[in-house]
Length: 494
Image (cartoon, rainbow, N blue to C red):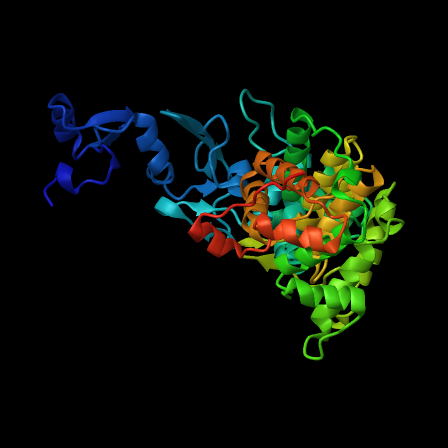
């Protein structure tokens, strides 16, 4: 390569005495442009902000060689909201660039525990990052150099949730070891108190809501709480359906039967409807599938009991107890699934990883607090169903339990239940995913509204009439075949 060959230069580079003349000529010729102090690029297409943002770590390494990424940047791993990137180097100065400001303070060189990073930089070890964020700092305009005490607590809680207690204990030990090198013994003492309190061995004052919950023995999943809040807000913006009188659909044992049948079919417990009727109404348990038969029986016993389905929880503790009791009844035939006991291992469906077992009870109780603020039965039913389905508190049977809890809200308010026919399974699951993965609540509300309207349209006064109308409206169709052949769930004649 020649002394200065534009085609061989990186997208962003610093001018030096050796190439300054050639750089000046290239700028005048319109081949490169200046985007910062001695900083140039041959990219003439993208905005300076785009170029800098794409390369800011390398730029920081060029301007502050061997610097350490510190303070809030070391924990956030991205520029602050005002574009600040905080560094520790041999000098104190600020370099303003399009969209980014490099803010270096004179400080400790890389420790043995710090890690090599992009562009010749180093990044603080997690222990150093927490210590420096716990240290007091001068007030400044714009975003604070260091995270607040509350933000530190929230991050420590996340570390415990995601990485485990052993990780946070090792971090605490390292912080104790390196604090004297950084002259941050006071910060280390405070960090020690916070970690000890989160682990239940100390009793320091905690500021953050999520950290306080952990210290109280009720840690919760903050991401799920965001989803529950989004659903609550959408429900408050949406007018609940007018009251749907269940007597129109026929008050009998048949609606609960088909509710139990479809709820199990969705979860893979597949019987012909005539077989299911024999199990429920005649007590015929197939010799080859006793556990599957007990799934349907257990579900039916719960949903067919007006007394059971009229019970609503009044406190978080009653909510947890009611769920456990109903789950125990539904899953009675599967002792290997720990009926009535919260899961001990993480579970997932597709790409969705449900709430960590250690956070189940705390997340359920936090969600219940939001549920208590909802008054309309349909809205309470929708929220309750998603709350249970999204937490997935048990090893198995969560979908069935979620729909039981949903319909109990409607039965207790003397409103029509919601059944999810086989053909509607994909619509149901897609609406749940939209909320779970994208915080889009409106599809789920719309889906449940139609499902309730559909349930109202079927005459359940006799078994024969109900089965006939369900078949005429495509309720029993496989959803994959229905999609391929263009069939949809149709409203009944009522």
